[in-house]
Structure formats: C-alpha cells, structure tokens
Length: 324
Length: 276
Image (spheres, rainbow over the protein chains, first blue to last red):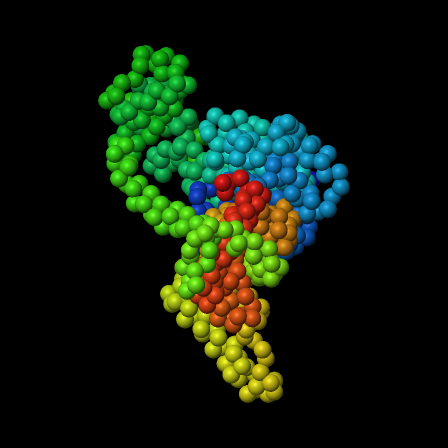
C-alpha cells in the first residue's frame, strides 16, 4: 500500500501563535485516517494547508509522491467536504455535483453525476436546490460533489458536527461504508473521540499544533503515549500518579479476596445510573476522586446495591495501569 | 389597535396623496390643457401636446437619453462590481472604503458638477496640464458633448451601483469561493460561475437605481452637455422655463414616467424571484 499524503515538519505560524507547529505524518492510500483534537489544536489549519487554502510557514506537503507546496487549490488533486458543506445555493444538487466535472472539461458528465448521487443515495433529488434539502441530504450532496472528482485524498472538516445526534451516528456508519466502497483515502478532522474511534483505521491525536500520538483506535485508547491523549480519548482516574480508565477501576466491600491486587480505601460520594451501566464515584483518603464503571449485574451481585456514604475499596489490576 | 394603526399610517398616506398622487393628477390635467401666453395653462382641453410628441426630434432625444443612461449603467456596473467586491472582501479598513464611496454625498451635487466643468473646459485643469506638459497644442473638446454627460452620469450615480452590490457580496459565504477553487475552478471561472450569479439581486438593484435616475437627469446634461447634448430631463425643464409651454412639458414628463414604469416592469419580469 502506497502513501497518499505525507506531511514533513509542516508549520503555520500566525503573529503571536503557532497554529500548526511542525507535524509529520504519513497517510497510507485507501484508508480512513482521522485528525483528532480539541478545538484550536490546529487540525483544521492542517486540513487547509493540505487543500491549499493557506500556505505553510515551513515544511512540505507531498501528494501522491509530488511536492505540492505553492500549488493553488485548483491545482491539487484533493477535495474538501466543508463543515457547513458550502454548497452553491444557486445551483441544483445535480449542478453542484457537476461543478468540478465542468471545470475539468470531462465528458459523460451526466452519467458520472448520476452515479455519484446514487452512491450517496440521493437519486431522484437531482433537481432540488440546497435550500430544499435536509441537513443530511446536503451533506450527501457535498460528499458526491467531491467524490465524483475521484481525488487522491478526500478532506473532511468536521462533516458530522452540523447534524443532529441521531443522524450523526447513522452517518458514521454510512461514511465508513462509503469509504470502503470507493477506496479513496479519507482524511477526517474531528474533535469527537467517539467518532474518531469508531470510524478510523488510524488516528493522529493533536494538541497545541503538534501530533501527540499516531496509532490505531485500540492503540491510542489502550496505550496512550501521553497524559493528554489518555485524558482526551476517554475518562481517566488519577490515583497517586497512576492512570486508570473507569471500566478497569473496580470496587470491593472487603479486601480479603483481592489476592494482593493494589487497593485503596474510599467513601462512595455519587452514584449515577446510566442505563447500560452505573458510574460510582468514590473519594480516597488522599482527597482524589475515582469513578468506577460497574455493569448493572455486578452492582447487584455484590450483596445488594451500593449506597452513598458507604466505605468501600477501590482496586485494579497492574496490567490496566497507565504510567506517563 | 386599529385606531393606533390609523394614526401611525396617516402621515404616510398624507404624504402619498398630497405629494405624489395630487401632483400626478395635476400634471395629467396640465398635459391635456392649452398653453398660456406667459406660461401656465388655460382652457380648452386638447390632445395637442401629445400630437406634437410624434415629431422625430423628440424621439431622438428620448433614444439618446436611453442610450446615455444604458451606457452610464453599464459603465457603473463594470466599474462598481470590482470595487464592491474589493470592499466586501477587504479584511481591514472596510468601513473607511465604504465612507469614501459615500463621501461625495456630503457636498451638493450642483457644486460637484461645476467642479467637473472647471476640470474639463478648454482652460480647465486637464487641458492646461496637458498643454503645459507639451502633449497638446490645442485644448481637447472635453466639455459640452455626450462624453462629458456620460462622465457626469457615471460619476454621479456610481455609489448607487456600489452600495447594493456591496450589500449582496458582503453576505456571500467566503467558503463558497474556497469550495469553487477546491473543485478546480480558476479565479475567473469562480467569478462567473459563483460570484456573479450570487450577486444577481444586487446587480438588478444597482441597475434599477442607476438607470432610472439617469433617464430623468437634467442637471448633468444641462451643465456638462451645455445644450448640445440634450436629454429628456432638459426637454421637460425647458418647457417650464424658456419655452413657457407647460402642457407640452407635462406631456413629456408623463411619457417619460410611463416609459420608466414599462422599463421597471420589464426588469422585474426577468429579475430573480427573491427580489419581488
């Protein structure tokens, strides 16, 4: 598998701050790659540098083995799905999708447009204007408009952020499915760790303009390289400098059966019923608070339900500890 | 509630009836009366003024007015569009540029037109400078011709084109320009396939706002055309002053109004729906 896109020490400095501060990445062809990070971490700027909307202060962008620094956006074989889709309001869905094909002077445009709209399940809505389409449909037009050009890399800038939560979850599955079918490299920018974990082949976690870790979803979640990655990708308990995920933090009423596993006495401070599980927060003698995620069955097996104010022991297995 | 509505709407109704409808009726009546010896009108009722309008001389003046107004509108559009786009896209000093566009309104239109006369006449600044620098021996005939009138119209009405264009271009999502470039459109292609279509409401508004006042202009052709380049506005003015033919002046202004109305209807028939 070749490399679609490579960034070498890419940086974008503005007066007073560095939006992107020297990042290097290799993005393999045909995969679903995510840039994940909090707002202001430089992920959108990185995308804009790749698309050519902005020129880097330093570093290089290589696309299919060619250096593309200095090339205008219309000279780069990438295409962007914008956060608010940026559909042309004066053009129908069909004309929006046809826009790029006309610029390239391609023939059999109608057939290509029809195929692209069918791919995103919008057949029959060709003659609608963006204002006559729902949010989800607009997003599909934006996808078709870019995919019809068969770019080397499709850049997606938080494309699900504007959708309502239910539709967002459905589109996650569809987008991933679509990527597998077309085989185009997707570079997906998001601040939603659940989105990144569920869709990506690889994730680059960004913070303050730098890449903190690159890896598969399992790697970045189970073996985070930094404290920041650990905290950003899920909830964390910090017990005397040791990091623990709530699902590996366990509770026991007495320490007799723990066979030497590390344990700390604590007092239950909060109990939250979340439907599929229960979150039990407890305060340790050090003043630190830890949350244990307990399945409904476990909570009842333990000789009746836990109560707030009850003394308890928090314990865990050595293998689940995270050290930084 | 209804009472309140009545009182609030009363000034507007009074305005329309006293200052618009009543004068219109008076002009209509004047155009159908006979000419008084020292101006004014007298009985009997007659179609004479309208009959005289058939004279090709007046047709020529009307056509010249339309041609000059259309040319002025076209030039305003060609000059105003890049300017409006520049101001709308400017990242800094936006309001300074806008103020510069409307700055001329701070002084009287009459004074500004006189200023053009001082610039353009044979002994004016332009000719003096060109002769002084040795480019010319004889002064160029810059004043008292169609070109001077056209210049004056473009100068006077350019802000009316720039402002509505600016208003629509300013609202345009900049991401659309990036999207166009992203899909492979070069700058000219983006301009004609995205920017101009989206600016259509502003273009229509600008055309109407420039073309119609140009058609009725009389000060500019009077001062810069000097009686040689006569427009309909001058014809009307002349009937009420020198010619002392009020019925004919009324008839000409009514015809001009009807023509303007017809032009507006034709415009709006073709204009995008969102303007109506």
